[in-house]
Amino acid sequence: MRIGRAGWTLIGIWAFAILLAMPALQHWKAPAPATGLRLAVTLVALYAIAGGICWVIYIRERSGLGRRRAGMLVFLTILLTFLTNHIHRFSVDDSSSYFGYPAVQWQVMLQDKAVELDPGVRPHSYRFLPNSAVRWVEMTGVGFAQSRDFYRLVTGLLLFYALFRFARLYCEPAASFVAMLLAGLIYPVSYEYYAGQLTDPLSHLSFILAFIFLETGAFGLLVAAIGIGSMAKESVLALVVYYAIFKRGEPRHLIKSATLFAVAGVSFLGARLLVLGGSWMRYDQISGVTLKDFPLNWHDPLWPGVFILTACAFTPVLVLYWKETPLELKRLALFLLPVLAVTNMVISWMRESRNFMPVVFVFAVIAARAIVPVGAPELP
Image 1: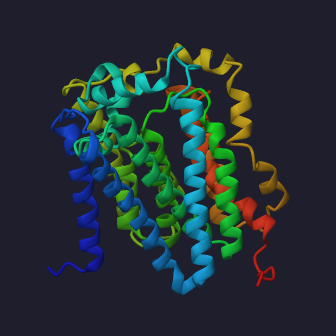
Image 2 (image 1 turned 60 degrees about the vertical axis):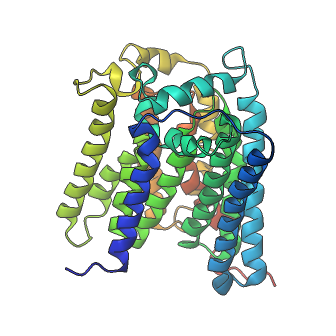
């Protein structure tokens, strides 16, 4: 059987994901950080890769957007990435508000334990793919903090560009820029009450990619986004249920839904059985939260504020522009909002508003369409 271009693309994506996971699967130890010229050369090479990503974005969009707008896209992508990462570094990494000492000390410990797939730091050890990616950078001789920052740089660039591409499915370019700005406005709010674990940037990216593939019907890429993304954070598996409910009109829907459920089961249970040494898991081993924590979650006075400022920040826009909002965006928003809230309540911590960012991306597109309506005159 002849494998087409799409097939080879999928093979390449899965092969890259396996390669990315090797440090965790093999429990690689980070070498001593390099110094002097070797470190400088390595950092230049790494940031040249980030520059190359920006150049590829520009080349890919230049023909459709024109040079100036493609340049604006790259500029906004870089600006929002650096801005959100700078706020993150100041408010989380170097802050002592969470543990009483700089969070980076905890991050270093967690990095080693997660790559070792240590069950003592679950659920972080279930979400080993981001830590494994950072370990690859560490293997070049770059220290943890700089490796972490490079990982956040790359994932940030890809995330904001993916958000632009998602918005372009429903918006003109100007509105898509607004969607990026709106998401960047809310993103730093989600930094409260968390200590900088590596999982979220890659998890958020997997959500946006899955949104794109849901709309475009690229099923193979959807499977990859959900399956690989779940190795960063299992919350993306909620989209398996979304597909089963709302994509019933697609050809071979039952077979495709069964495939997604199988991938979800293998990824969810496989990661946990791998970390737990093959033993069956209890409820408290799903994500480290027990049933006794539910009332504590509910009565925690810290979660309503961040929940309103993230998950609910743009909900009034959906109400005001209900008729003008595309059906797919309505479905995603109204599905993700309660699902993320409930799962955050029963298997996570409600104050951790990072978990609500996927629905923020959807609402940002809805709000951008309201600010720059479809069909509005384009600026020269």
